[in-house]
Figure 1: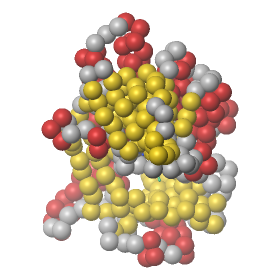
Figure 2: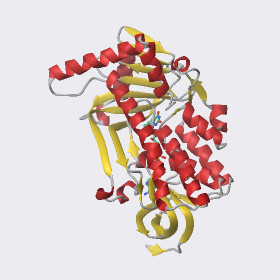
Figure 3: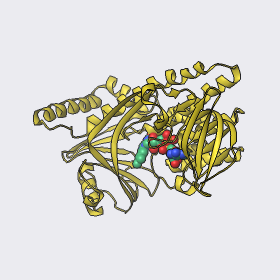
Figure 4: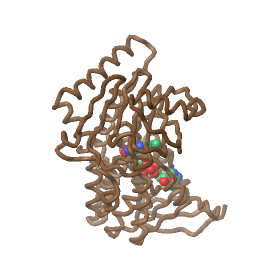
Length: 397
Ligand SMILES: Cc1cc2nc3c(=O)[nH]c(=O)nc-3n(C[C@H](O)[C@H](O)[C@H](O)COP(=O)(O)OP(=O)(O)OC[C@H]3O[C@@H](n4cnc5c(N)ncnc54)[C@H](O)[C@@H]3O)c2cc1C
């Protein structure tokens, strides 16, 4: 591999996912120069079907920075979800319970595409197909060494700061020495099969199936794409789940006739929670999935990523405008961590409410099952409980 000349910038952003591209847009608007690098090319980034539920808090942040136009135009508001049992169901009108705050459903891939275009239109620089391979910190800066996958050369970027927005499998998180951070994790004895289908909406609102065979969910993406999830065993392989078995299980667990369609994507998701504290290691600041992973339950990952980016941008702007020292950047962790933990707690609690409990001791499992049933019953019967749930669900944290 040959060396290329070095580039210089104030903030080098690893990753052009939601965290990275929102941060890039806000820094650029405030005159702070930055370079975004992403290991993938544009088409690969846009092809990733992931999240879709954008919280009111996230919309407010995007609006404040002029980044919400397309969501508001093309996304659709969503204010209710339904819990379905084999022979019963109830609809939770969380929009009403949270005094009118709603989600917008808009595919993450479309949001990412809009924001990358906006960043480029404003004069921002993105190096696609450049993978960060090493970070080297010194007293006065940080160097990102990256591999240009188009030309098989290496490039060095000299920056004041690196924003690690490169997801759970990226370079940033792994560049924090073990002794510099505390890591909190939780893994599960079951997984999810995530399904993206070219199928008409099963319902105008989200469905959660609570079933003795396991959890299932449906989320509308748009008029012809539907997202489904199935709880599966940790030992299952993709080959265990034929399209025919997927549809049969979805019909059964969602207790609803569904219009089938072509399954475009089937993916086994390892469910995991992860938080690294603090979110700063010297000149490296972590945001989004690089800083925390949450199960998809409750739709928090994308929202946390965008909200991290908002606070990180404000912190960096404050640092540059007011000539602060490095310790000023600790406010980023101090502000974000309580929200990150609140989202973790909410998502974990909802996950347990609707899943078959884990455990090898049948008595424990029966006990946990009764606790989950009690929580679901409170959601149905207690306005106080339901209002608090709605507030957390829609992201008013
Ligand atoms: C199937 C699925 C469904 C989901 N559903 C929801 C949902 O409904 N609601 C919700 O809120 N969240 C959901 N999530 C989670 C959500 O997608 C993530 O939390 C979100 O993408 C995090 O954004 P990010 O910017 O932190 O990371 P990412 O979106 O992962 O972006 C990281 C970027 O960094 C790049 N990168 C990685 N390593 C390097 C490197 N070494 N050098 C340069 N670039 C690098 C990657 O190419 C990528 O573009 C879902 C996730 C999955 C997988």
